[in-house]
Image 1 (tube, one colour):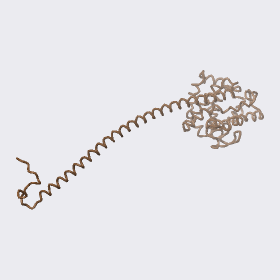
Image 2: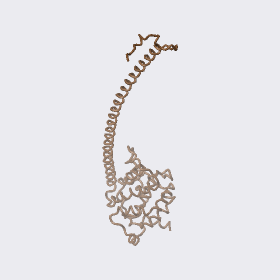
Image 3: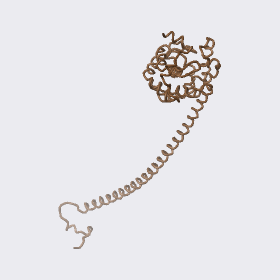
Image 4: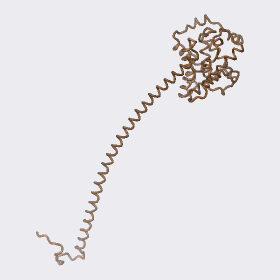
Length: 311
């Protein structure tokens, strides 16, 4: 059947229904052309969006790779810094130990005394609830409590008998000498050591030395070391005494509750005495036989008056 061109259609051949089919056809052609243009625009936009998405994905992948490399490099740097910090920390501990040994090198028991003092103090500080940073400070600082003894005469330090009043006054100076040695600190650890050196002979009732500081005005680190130092001195051999039995040592410290020592720390000490004994036995080269200690026990000249007063 032949195709009839619209412009040569005889108007007489169109239905006489009042509709202008030619106009309607033109409008449909215009709408179709518009839709084709819009479709082409949509296709172009979709293509650009796809390309952009690929580029962004590529950029994202590159950024992810760079981020992973940065994180890996950062972890490596942290690892290197931790290693350097550990080396510095070990060197710092070594320097502290050498300082302490220099101040007490004549005492063959010094090495174990340093270890016991440090561990007793950390153990009691942990029981008291101090945080990790404070525990580390006490661990490193507590061995320096008697560094001031480097300025005290040997005749006084190693006297086998009760000190005269003048000798005792001289002995008291080790606290201020130690504080002077550790003065103007550049670190929290050395400041902690200075406080301990100065205040570990202060008493809870204010009758200690060198400044008669009382109660909670005494730094907590010095209050902790006061008990640790006393326990170690009582249970160890000294030039002026043989070791005291554990129960006798505990009794002396218990009777100093609220007088010589912080009551709450004494309670923790007595309640956890097995932990202190375990530390002592783990450090001492030869575990002391308590039965033998008791058999050889006598009060030192320095303690006889106090023992008599205690009944």
